[in-house]
Length: 409
Ligand SMILES: Cc1cc2nc3c(=O)[nH]c(=O)nc-3n(C[C@H](O)[C@H](O)[C@H](O)COP(=O)(O)OP(=O)(O)OC[C@H]3O[C@@H](n4cnc5c(N)ncnc54)[C@H](O)[C@@H]3O)c2cc1C
Image (cartoon, rainbow, N blue to C red):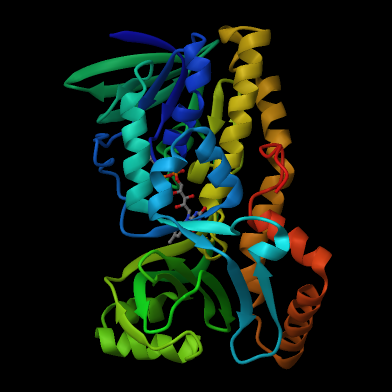
């Protein structure tokens, strides 16, 4: 059976789902959109693995986009505001401290359990009456036709062929779409893994987030509701594998050594999960009738908490471009390469800065040696003392940059 849509989104993770919701206005004006995912979307959340017990740091820019979508209201009660951030290196001088008040914003960001984000996105998707959902569906293959992209899927026991003016690949870091269309996802392996878990300390976190760089790898502690922290602890692969097997008390003791006692004593650590650390970048983010988005386009080191935030800014700018093409030129022009290149160009600077910050922060702090250590200490102290430098750094971290953000903080 053959189907025709103006836009087809493959992947209903955080990015594909957000794109569907941001396209609501265009759908109201007649844009025909289909969403494909191998997992079912349900009222209590999609079944897909990203909507797990992890937490995600949402930037202020992301909060503003989610508010526009009227979904922040459902997330807010379970979000923990980050009012202060401290960046430091273990056992050395120099640190940067950022405060929401100094930057004139209500919070530097918010930490939200992925389960909550998944639930709210899923409920909103199910309410989109104009969206066609093919879920669960298995993508069998992709091909390019003269004036469209074509997706072959198996859905509800049927083989379907779907033609589209614009195919959006939001199918994650190991994108089958990229593989089948010959789009290389270049990877840099950090040779590290991240150990993730939730923590309770006997001190009050008072809305502080910590980024601590050690020679073994970076560590982030994010405040979550219920006076808990979400931990992202990066280290060599073999060390991380070994740490997964130790008892809770041995794990807590190792971690306490690294974070010190000024935040309090660790009283409980939850179930641990392990993530390999890679930087992946699609070598083409756009081509005629195709856009690569989210983790499929760029998968970042998680310690700066920027992957989804950047992808949502990309998504917002892509939607602006789709709306513009739609009103000025019509549906059949949506996949034209010049419009897609204009979208990519609008996001290029933001992507370069965000990916650079996420990559160089963790890697530069693993260089050993006294000179490196002094340089880093001087760099952190200098940034701490120069308000303009702090604000530039804070605005990038808060996602208040680039073509996606017309607002002033
Ligand atoms: C440990 C960790 C911590 C992080 N912390 C943060 C943070 O604090 N802040 C932040 O901004 N970002 C963070 N990130 C990054 C963030 O999680 C990702 O950027 C985001 O999840 C990417 O979403 P996505 O929708 O692009 O991909 P995914 O979540 O991978 O979704 C891809 C979707 O495509 C579907 N799919 C795949 N293949 C097919 C197929 N063949 N057919 C049909 N469907 C398919 C899948 O089912 C899935 O639903 C973190 C990442 C990690 C690993």
